Image 1 (cartoon, rainbow, N blue to C red):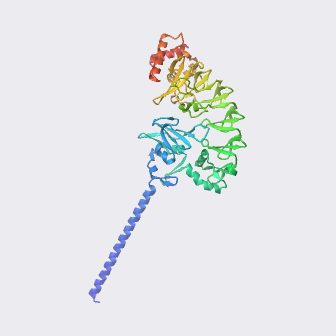
Image 2 (cartoon, rainbow, N blue to C red):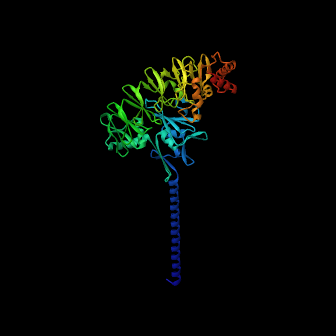
Length: 515
């Protein structure tokens, strides 16, 4: 090989090495780019919000979530179907196309929402008690483009789900009660129990990391454990019922019931024949013993002696009144029956009305347009009956005219609007106009749900006679008679339109003072 050939060969080898180096460098750069892109995509994927429903990613549900001033919201009706609920406009038992209200319903439960309200009313359809559970959340329902939205807290409470947001990983985790019950079913076997209680209320305890379990023959022994199998209530009870509103347990032993806390402590001794939650805000239970009824607080202290024949009224005839609690009427009154007569206690356990009334509420008789009426809710007044005559009581138990004198106090619903009327001796007056004229404030205006009357109305309510409702008083002047006749005609012609002129108000005020 000569020097020329050797030099050429060296150049070719160097060229190949340089080419190889370039290719290797290019491959390395491409690999770096691929790794960088993969890392970036992984980062984007890991930081993009994801929603996991019952262990599975759900992009459709994720698209419904919005943030408003740092608070997470979801459209109520749209999210319902993902959580096993149907949804409707209006309010349960009082259905309408009112878009400012909606309710959701599953096989077991109903939850009612209202625009600008932070209160959710829930009804357990599997329970015979029929009382609504009142749930208060931090933020009210809002509207976006005509759609009602609730916070994640409200969604969690209303739909019985665990709703958790991991801000660091940007993950939303939603777990439904059926999923959690199924997930823990096998574990309770390892704990030495037979099954998880199939009672709907009991299954909700899993949302608080507690499980109501059974064992023994026919699953006749009840206990409560946490999700790790640690004992909360021993396996020795004939029955256990979880109380979501208080996060306690009603237990039964030898036919007697009491209340135990979620730490196993005794709150109400196991000595009663029955216990039912009256209201968690008031902190009261209805308790019975030997066929008599009374009220106790959440620690078992007596508030109303257990010596009465009934507490609470049957609200089934008053479905259109949309009564949420059969034990507390007009915001502050507990109806109590002794013998054949009814009286009233307040939420502090003080008797405010003696046992003098035959019943509470009006049952429609002959007027085909009239509907049964128990309370006028906006004003928090109660209808009472004695000797087949009716009167109105305010939330302090005071009568709003002398004795039961009305022949009818009823409601009508026309075009979605509810109207209330008082009839005495074939004369009819709009009840809300009457209440306005004697100084009764609406509950929303008074700022106090337990006493909805002004000082003036409390001082004058017992001075108001039948002449304020009808024009039957012979001493009433011609001007007052004409005014009330005009009012009656206005009520009949305009189906309860609540407007009166200044002269009428002056005449009626003069009439109050004269009587």
